Amino acid sequence: MAKQELNVGIVGAGIGGIMCSIAIARAGGNVTVLEAAQQLGEIGAGIQMVVGDNLVSFQELNLRRKDGTKVGWTKISRVEQATGYPWWLVHRHHLHNGLVEVARKNGVKIVIDSRVSAFSQQADGKVGVTTEKGKSYIFDLVIGSDGVQSIVRRTLFPDVKPKPPTGNCAYRAIVPYEEVRKDPLTRELVEDKDGNLIRTMEVWMAPQGYIISYPISDAKDFNMVLSHHRNPPPDSVREVDIGEVHKEYEDYDPRIRRIIEKIPPGVQRWPLLQTGPLESWSSPEKNMVLIGDAAHSMVNHMAQGAATAMEDGAFLARCLATVIEGKATVAEAVQIYEKGRMPKASHKQQVSFLNGWLWMLPDGAAQEARDKAMEVELKGEVPMRSPNLYGDPGCVLEVYGYDPEKHADEEIATWLNHGRAVRDAATTIQQTRADQIANWFLPSSHNFQINSRL
Image (cartoon, rainbow, N blue to C red; front, top):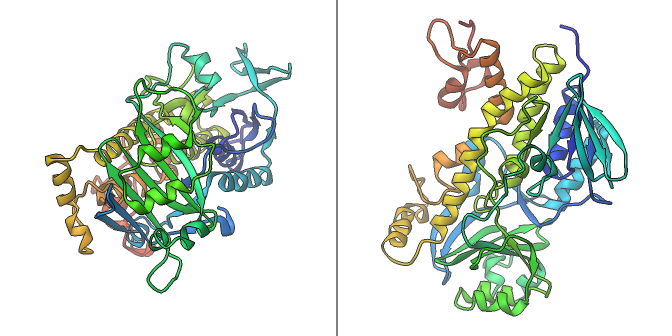
């Protein structure tokens, strides 16, 4: 079929929006990204995620009681082996810079200082976009990747307001790795007995909060997210006195408490806001659609917010490729995207909340059962199931082994097959099931492949 021109406008140049722009550009679309800020950048620090020396690989995850006692453990190479991908840690700013560079190389037009003020439906089914400075654009599709306070979502669903599901919130802080290494009390968290640098993810679990730490920026920075509770729940970012942070964790492991004492003033408290799940992510005309936090902001306990936004972009771009190829309309592509991604994002929201719940169990029977269920991990064994979701086999494959483009291809094939799942005619096997159960360990020449369709 003849190629169709597709002009896409993306509102918001964060990690999700830029990733989406790259995927659509590579599919053959013309992409303009409108960013409200006067300069590009990302707020926040660590992200679990391509960008050179700033990437950090790490060896293990240690789950601890708040006094430092280790109760759970994951060898990261096992996760990497199971998923087929490396597990890297990177500063959000470094990742964002790398994605922006890739986007521009793929012809994406990024326009800063372009805060969107209004949208208008056009007679030909397109969308008009106007900025506060009076600049106007016309797009075949508008994608809202403009975060928790999204103007696109407010336009589509004015009654939807992201809110904290509980009083849980978080401080974010960074301490130079060298400061941790030179302190005799904290050195053992970042060095082995021979003085060699080690890179680990550490979690200190407690009933009213937890601390998670990991290296970023080529292991030059010790990044921390410090969970706690406040009543009433905060709904905006606010700077707090450093003394408040010290007091919050005064009865934790002396090693992490000493690192907290090294945090410079200027710490901020971040609310954990959740959006939805919504009944729709799109306009009635299906020419405006949401991705990322604009559609499904979630608590941070599995560090999946940015990852889920990137998945949205990759999936949506695959759907839009069918429009460019002349196989579907924009509206049909958006419908395929919503059908596939909305349940997945809801799943991520639930997993993220439950992981925090597991980390903050009150001392007593439930906490003891959690810790006992992870005992085999401390022996180096791989459990069938675990409350350590970073090592639980099922959760690892569902969260980290997920391929949004493969998922999109399956949903597109089902749609092209008039809503029926595509199966091998003789065996009734679906390709997804074959990939999950058999093909993951086989050489490609021996993979089970569907050779005929119903």
